[in-house]
Amino acid sequence: MLFNTAARLLSGGGKWAGTIKEGLRLLSEDVRAAMTNDPAARNPLEVILAYPGVHALWMHRVSHRLWQSGLVTLPRVLSHLARFLTGIEIHPGAEIGRGVFIDHGMGVVIGETATVGDRCLLYQGVVLGGTSLEKKKRHPDLESDVVVGAGAIVLGPIRIGRGSRVGAGSVVIKEVPPGSTVVGVPARVVAQNGKAVRSPLDHANLPDPLVQTLQSIEARLSSLEERVAASSTGPDSETASAEAPRQARRQGTTVRAR
Image (cartoon, rainbow, N blue to C red; front, side, top):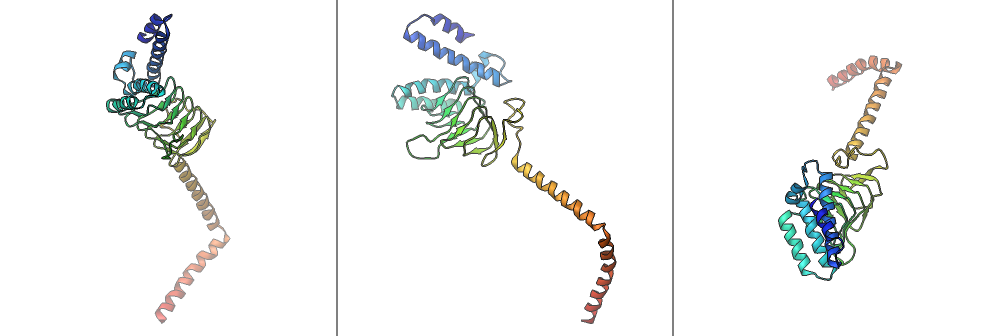
């Protein structure tokens, strides 16, 4: 691959050569992450030229390095340029791990104090937002191998455990244990260390707690209807059926008398 070839050519160089080599290795991992997580990716060249999520990550890696060196304005300008070009806003202060992939990416926002672990997968519209105006840790931490579905919002200095999945459209405001699946507004844990989802991309087929509650109510109503039907066929029901016409005649007589 192009990046690997360039890294080999730079091997054995000085300090700058080592830095460039490491940067090329990171770029190569980003391309491989896109090839692994997107079945629509046909070849590395397509990813390099036409994947905004990959471009946003590359620009962020540069702006983050400048941010760490003490610069402020230039990294923010690069971040703004990346947002203009890709529709993805990543603050230069955010820490992004290796092998991360942002699929489609339009509308993704990652705040200043957020961290995204290795091999995380984010879809369009994901927000890793803050809940405080104070200059402190105020954004979430995603551990490794976390999948966040389209339109999901994760708020505050909370931790999303390793290997967890956040359903599309969910709003997460509490800690999520490792290996959990959360869905809903606000998000609730609906699976933890249970049966594995067939694929990390299968975030659309997650259990819906609202549907599960309605199904439970429906099952209870059906059980009550069966009990009522069973009781209506007992000995008392025959007496009640015979008494009903007499009561109706008495009521009619009373109305005419009035």
